[in-house]
Image (cartoon, rainbow, N blue to C red; front, top):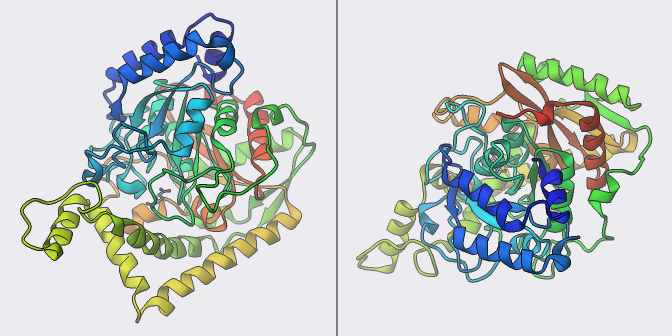
Length: 475
Ligand code: GLN
């Protein structure tokens, strides 16, 4: 069952929330892909019973009766929240993040929390303290990252929806590698309160599902104005699920000029070309846009993101919460050994880079330049959007790759994000959806929209999915 079928069955009483949860938990307990860090049988069954007993109150909610898995970056009251790190292995949050609370209020039942790259830093889910996640399509391959567990969970049909976060591509890239749909909303649409910070000016939570329909319903639940997040935007509420059936007419869709020069794998380009014909078949017009400065985005990101991470992660000092190294003779040793033992290599590398680029002698040379590039990319998008309604490009350069393949070469791994990072730098919404297969592995295509244009992104993807079958493929 996909999300819609499951929710329909709950609404028509063909299945109870408790039955749905039991089914999901049975599969979760049998998981061989290391998708989860924790699952919550007692809590989930209790919550499902509450929903079944109050059926009338819940039946029309966007996620009524549907099991959900949350990325382990979202704080959950009274339950562990690890962020994929030894530093938070035993951390119990004293409150629910706004996303978790919104999903609960919307009638979903949290069954588990998903594995992820440590503090959301990675593109392969191999930096998790709890071990790598396997790709459901081929267990020797990575699912992508950092929300690799969340994407694999939906891809393998363990739940029909899950939450992720996307700072530089961590929703769209794993969605592409696992053959599902994932949306990174406009910065400020979804509250970041209770979501452990990596790079606060880009972090944004969003939905995963097999299709745009599931993503729309989950986004309806997730998005809300929240006073507790000062970057959350007050806006006119849009019902994303309802907007799927709207007619937005014929669109101007920007497509990438000279795409063969970007170092994208041939199979991905072939899928891209096929998808262009799907778009024209739906009555849209294609307009070429020049994105030759794409690669400067990645350079800018890998200065700004470490800079913000070095600041954000300074709170993990062994004093306030989380891991504390034992028997230290003074406070300096306590800080030093706690952070040396508690963080993994990728996280420590980013803290070092971030501290360096913010230091007095290097701030102007690196951090300030990176911010200028960021502004340039934002302006570039604004200019594109004078002529086009959406931009279409592949999500990734490659399909899913082998574990350990890129881990020894950081530049290669960082390049994974070439096509996803520009939307984060500009704060724009973007969606990845399955748009082809090769060697029995999925390929993802990406649409980028205007600020708060999630309704158009979801609508366009939904229309594509009405005439294509890639999102229905199952590992
Ligand atoms: N792969 C990118 C990084 O490692 C993006 C991560 C993310 O979006 N959370 O920073």
